[in-house]
Length: 209
Image 1 (cartoon, helix red, strand yellow):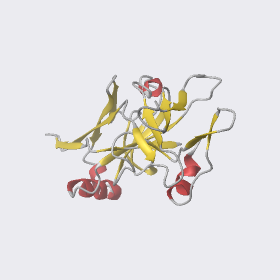
Image 2 (image 1 turned 90 degrees about the vertical axis):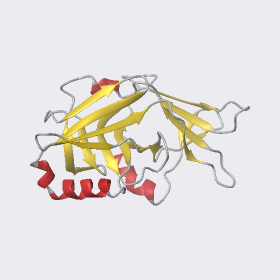
Image 3 (image 1 turned 180 degrees about the vertical axis):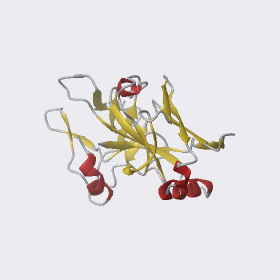
Image 4 (image 1 turned 45 degrees about the horizontal axis):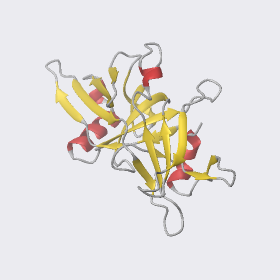
């Protein structure tokens, strides 16, 4: 599974019933710099296009979870439970989750809410997979940046299978991005994935499609 991130856009409100309404927004069409290329490499950027997540979002029977830190052992809400509502639009994917009074008594929920109140959890990070090429031939495109703008390699995602959205302490990048996916051109002009880096990428690799 791949992860993206967006800083900010989280809001919590108390309802009369005692439940909490947690709202969030993940913007589309925001170019994210995955890496500046260092001293000898090339910059790599990534963009999630409008409604890229629509396939599973718009199908009622497709389960999507709201999690703490990409951990399915720490759920906050879900479509299947009727506590997670998602809306896909051209500009962003937005959601509203209902955190019931019962769930507010769960340890990881209390910790997450306390971290949000303290300003330590400030971002969103969707977990998704790219569909097989046989099913969606044009799910993504990788191309060279306009030379007048720079020398980056840009990967645009047009279709992705969204499985979860997580609240996270610190998204890796300030707007929309996908972590642990770097791309470099081969000699024949075909763009292929680089070998994963150490550290963060090693821990994320177990989620890759």
